[in-house]
Image (tube, rainbow, N blue to C red):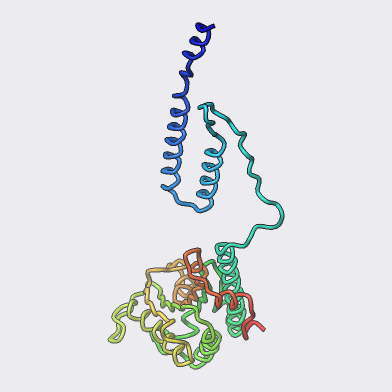
Length: 278
């Protein structure tokens, strides 16, 4: 009887070290997971990681005798009681998209008004109004605006350009005015080359726009000479097409991206109609 009791006392649990080893491996795994998560901080991923680690540590307990007790992990189910709560990011995205829609609508309205005031010239093919991803381009044949080799705007063309300027004066889009010529050389005391002629013609249109009420800070004049032809200079029709003045109205839609600050005023301005839209 004494021998059997001694044998039972001598029987020990030689696998208790597995508990400490398992805890060490778990902590090491958690360490590397946390290091990986920190390398790319994301609030949503961090919360999922934190909940998973807490749940993992809660699922393993050790009793007083050193035996390992495994508690089945609790499955986390997202609440489906209602729609997801609004986040600042979603409000920001909606505000940016609303602002872009408002800008697009405003650009279409400006293009329609320009086509209307220049309707006789567009019908004759002397003026082309096109809408693109970056804004509106108004191409005006130079023969409509200037005598050959001159930079003074005629009276009839001045009235047409003034009407265009009055359409643009109420907006805040940047405007670039480009002067272009054909490849026929010019050499006069006032214009030694086509560069000077194209630049002064663009400046003449800028001066007219300023006199008509357009904010000068929105205007840019550029002269390209014969370096940007849109037709073949070997024909008279092509040269006539290349002698032109372009009005580029920038839409600024691309400026409203995720990095742009959006305020409550932007949201209200994007949703509520302006006086010109009513």
